[in-house]
Image (cartoon, rainbow over the protein chains, first blue to last red):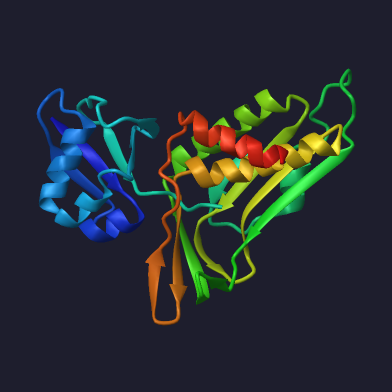
Length: 81
Length: 163
């Protein structure tokens, strides 16, 4: 099953991509996708406890299950305003 | 027509944002007695560094939903206050406005409170990031872990708004 991963700010710098396509097992959680990504880009590991996540532009949790075609976003701590 | 909530690269036009709220109250309600405007400006110093400029980035569709949520939260807490909120992205020079919040209400107290609440909530839950370019380098500023369901954070924003 294919999903799109969106990365922002420092996470985008670490991976070198604003958007990545990833194949994942049906019923995978966002947390599993994150951990796969962190294996690929070890610098991400430090963000494990401070990131937020979203599915299809709605806030979600790391145990949220994803579906084919979903857009998963990983968000470092925010600094708007 | 200028929307109540927006995020984009265009410079902020406070008068146009304020105009979106004018006359929105029903005839039966008290007419507005107060407009409170907050503009957040790019500062030339931060954490002891001399800042040259900032670049803002956002997850725009989620940012818009976060602004709308903040509007609903403020309306639930201060029912007679009406709020508009626009945020900029892209490169911003020192002194430029990165965010504009306008609140209208029959009375100033609620307008001030709702405005302060909105900026505190933006800093907690809006998926927006600033990258600071200073003498000798640049850094992504990282503040709060965004969690809209964190009631403790929401209560803290309300406490600051009512202080």
